[in-house]
Image (cartoon, rainbow, N blue to C red; front, side, top):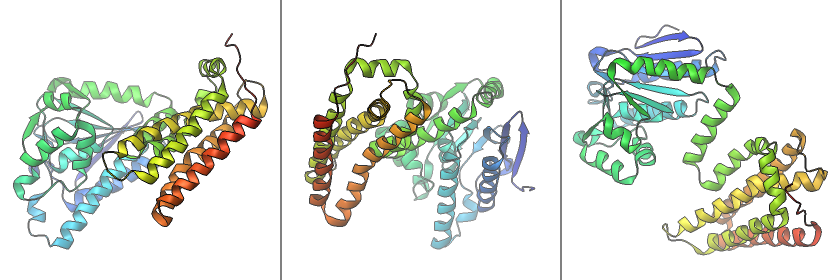
Length: 371
């Protein structure tokens, strides 16, 4: 498909998508956002493409923001549609399943900074400038920038940039964690070429898994993210070091700790309502998820097969059990919303008690010497 506002080129498994509106400093209008949707759909569906580079044409700007000449006369409904289209584009890029690198050579302001932040890696020239100046127009970032900036740079920096509209240089953006690397302007393409070749030559499945699990862990609560990451435990099951550690510690005490954490989590779930106190709930989420995501597959595989050597099939059995255990608290969240916190507490406590006594009564201690 021929694009009006984009350029697209492939080389050695790398697709370079360039926003080509230099006379408008590559500002985003409805047509450009629509074309970017199509371009990233094509990149996602092309098995020959392993890495995507997103760039802006010219030397002045990556993307200077949204095209204010277009939305200045927009109705509220049109403005809402424009914002939703931009948000959907950012999510599409973030969820592409292939690494996307933003090449930032100049201004990345407003929607341009939001576009850069949704990319997985951001390489910037020393001349680059970043900012969320929407406040000066009487609006707020409309493509999810407040949330991504919060996660990348922290609450203080997000508030400063969004409330003051101040521009920051590449050095400060790097210090805040907004960008990945800063290089001299004349070295920008060389740096990006080297990085894209490194990524394009990496094993594809781990590369995709790294993108997916990191993004999921960033946005989801700890326990839900663990459910997404648990299948990766199959790799850990094959690791002699993980197996040796589990054998040395003994499996039953660790699983009992996990069910104990599940019971405490249920109590917190039923009693905590203060948003700040919910940090404690997240902490126990992490403890429970860590035990179930790593140790349950080891325990189940060892008890079910008794060999202490974990094949892929054994890993799948253990991992499925770990997912089921972790999902119990996710389902409790639904139960709390639907039937009240007391029902959720009863359900979680019941699972914990049954699991606890099952392990105590029926699972033999499997402590072994690591040697």
